[in-house]
Length: 249
Image 1 (cartoon, rainbow, N blue to C red):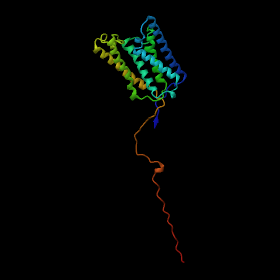
Image 2 (cartoon, one colour):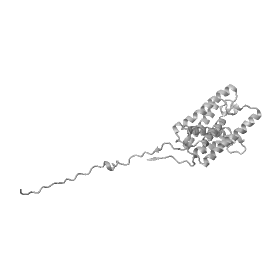
Image 3 (tube, rainbow, N blue to C red):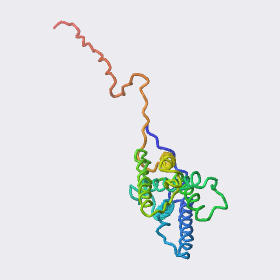
Image 4 (cartoon, rainbow, N blue to C red):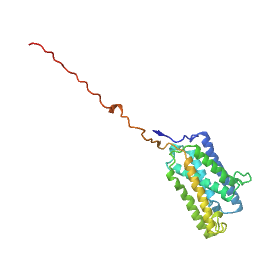
């Protein structure tokens, strides 16, 4: 007996899912345009802005959303669902870390700056909603979900190395001065890693089944197997005696 995982609540290229994805694109473009405009007016470099993990995850979310709008599931490459889930995990990491570690109490706070509200809260919420409600092409492979950890881990290592060279720290929990030494960095980074691992599990569990292989349900035999009809024991033949009558020649 075989059964498929839960059905998605929205069609991949339905009106509701497309509007949600267009909203993601619109929010990312609006937030980036506003922030870049301010930086250009101030004569500031854009390198630092695009060095933030949050900015990178937000821009990647916009790219994924554009791809989802432009191509139906049957035309996307097989690896696209992996990328979609990974980007969803990364943008959620940026959002959850911001509202729990960097700026506690900022969740859905109307006083939060527009760009921060969009990148740290609205886009992550929209991405995980899209991931949970709309189907992918293939079923989520949970054993490969841990590869979503690679990019954040590499980013953290590179950020620390570069910051030590130029003296500019992008995140306080990576800064030994702000975190009261390298032990403080280790403790806070471990906390962020715990958040990331929890998000990996969450995104893997919420992942849409798509049209991948079915999951088979195996049951133990409750009793002896019953042979099919064509393998049943043959019936005993009926002997037909031919009796010859006696007579004179």
